Image 1 (tube, rainbow, N blue to C red):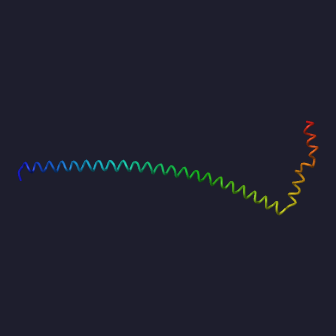
Image 2 (cartoon, rainbow, N blue to C red):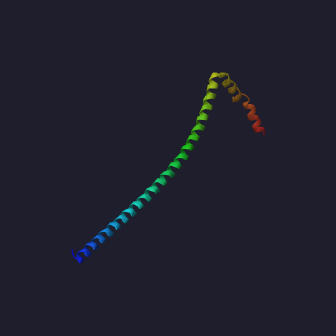
Image 3 (cartoon, rainbow, N blue to C red):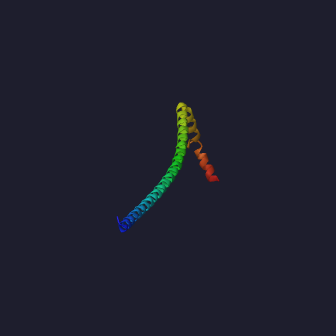
Length: 110
């Protein structure tokens, strides 16, 4: 092989290697960009999970309060059903007819 052929071959190899290097750099850059996008998506997903965790905790707290209120109401209903005399006593105490005229009279006198 002549010196010119060797030089031409050497230049072709350098050009080819330079092109491969540029392609590799471009590919690495694209992969880096994609990794950054995925990292942003993961961070947003983590934030969403944290927000949902707080919301679930709030809802569980409200549920516990409602269950406690329901339990108290159920206990009162059971107590009233087991002791019907309590209902009659309360009806007598809260009756509109019992002392109603006196209450109206006192109200208008004031």
